[in-house]
Image 1 (cartoon, rainbow, N blue to C red):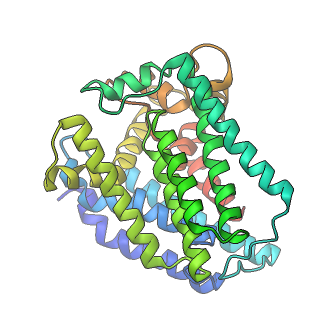
Image 2: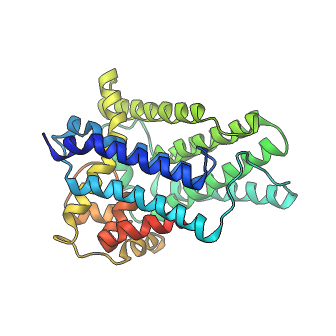
Length: 348
């Protein structure tokens, strides 16, 4: 029996205890409009659950006890940060219902201006690098990365402006004009535009937030069942699209395997980070953030995830490594970062 398999039941109980303590001490009911609840659930789904079916991908990577400890330590320190901030600053509890302030004309103009600027950045990216053909053949994952080299700043600006503009516009259409169908049309068109950059995740993120806004518009809150169903549906949809694009076919086992890979790949990447620092690469001491900021400079300036992939000599298709906040904290400051960064996030 591996260390992970032996510790898994106790780690699960430990995580449940941490979350229960957070809810009890901070008196925060589960509410996805509260960043604390949202962060904890994201940590559970995209970092923790993969531990329990790690054997499915044992041929790709064997998780070490260090990675399991890193995941648990991250959520414990985040919880302590939240509790500490509430106790020291007497923070007010977030409302159970979203209150939307009156939106003036300046807000509306700014929302549409941001969305239009995003479309212009996308057009500039298309002229300079070419827009992505999603059904262009088997080399798609490498192709969409190659065309972005040197032009990534336009892609990032397009994603940021289109996504933000669509959300702001949707808030106006839903809560001021009460035109829910128009808000969905804007969100759908914006998500379709983002697909031209070559990534599924920004479009999926945009539609998930649009669904959450619509739930608040209809019910005044965000039902956990609706949010959970939306996330599972989108994960399966992304997996189905990936299977058809990469394999040319799709069956239940293939789609399920790709869907389960999305949470587990974060653990694989954490394993790579823990193995690389500091034995192969010296701790970055904040350098990862500088690399991410450098993407706006002229020429080929890879972000940290892409830089790390190249530094480790990895040859998988597609973009760089998704290291998560815990992986980046470890790469910068080692175990001290794994303690301090989640504490700071929780306190914020």
